[in-house]
Amino acid sequence: MKQSCQPVLLIIFLLFSQQSFAQNPDKDFRDMEKYYEQGNYVDATQKAISFLRVRPTKKKAQEILATSFNMAMEDLRIEISDLKERSRSFSGDATVNDRRKIMDKYKLMRELDRGGREIVRVIPKQKVPLEFDRVNVSTELEAAQKSLDEAIELAAEMHYKEGLRLKENQDRESQKNAAKKFKAALNYVANYKDCDALYSTARKNAITRVAILPFINKSGVTQYGDVGEMTSDKLRAGILNNDAASEFIEIITRDQLDVVIREHNLNRTNDIIDQSTIAAYGKVLGIHLILTGKVMQVAVEHRQTIHDGARASTKRVITGTRNYTDSKGVKRSESIWGEVTAQNYYHHKTAFASMNGSYELIDVQTGRLVTSGQFRETKEWENHWSTYTGDQLAAEAPRGYDSGEMPTPSKSELAIMVMERLGTKISSDVINFIK
Figure 1 (cartoon, one colour):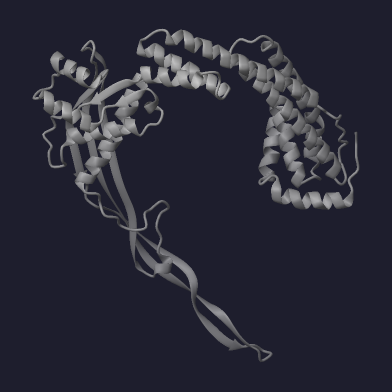
Figure 2: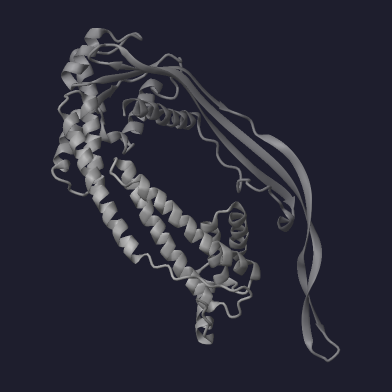
């Protein structure tokens, strides 16, 4: 239905649209053409509407909208029909996702309908006939929402029952999966039945308690502190600071570990943790896994400052002001321009730290190695800067250069930096294995 535009409405709309809608109309136009050529009529319609809000007289955009609008509506109807057929009967989380997509597509149809009718009203002189049938999906949206709510309720009940089944098994893995099921039910429906209490109990039973022993320093490097101990501390912090890991992993605190080591004389003098030592940790602290490791090499290097050369630069700038009286006797002034030069010198310096070694994760109950890994981590520090002689106005520095020479981190600081990176990397490996 084609409608004319009232002048006052047009002025108000154009003023508002310039401020509130498309921030980059040229990009909208290019995207519109691209989507239209690809047969993506939904996105082409959205971009055409967005563009015409700012530049309503563009004929090409009107032409594309005239065709793409009805094609987009037809595509959405077909997609909705396919989703309805696929989600006709409940089959789990996939049904919820499909019914959510149905809701989204009905909302998109409503959005396009409003946008299309808006454009028809505000274009002052249509160069292309724009007539769009009214698309009212209010009834369909209401039915889709009801269907989605039913699926959500069924999904919550499905996860709840699966959680009840899994929690009957006493092993940690089953308890972990049960906790995840109760959590999934709660994600669908807040405070669903007694899921909160069941999740809390299952999560507690699913916790894997891990003791991280000080790594053995076999590198021979001692000037940066206790490298082995510091590495295990960074690893411990990496796990403790990971919110996702805290759901099912508990790290034995350093204080707890120190007490057990002292009371049971568990200090290691070699690379091997014997079965009695493992059993002692497990009995006293209720530990499930022990993480131990070795630092085999530590290298820290300050590299010398390198001068990358020089380049002259010249700029034309205002060097002063000249006062004069013009032909009419009026006093005036003008800028005096001249050239200034500078000689630019470029420098850089670097520093480097690396560590490598290995770690092992041991099951306390069986004394067996459950996983292990090699590690090598590096930390590089760089400083690029420039100096000059001559006039500051002509001085130049390449893009990305630092503002000046910076103090090089000490070797101890570099060692700590690489330990922190190493702790983050190993903690990620351990978390992924346990979870």
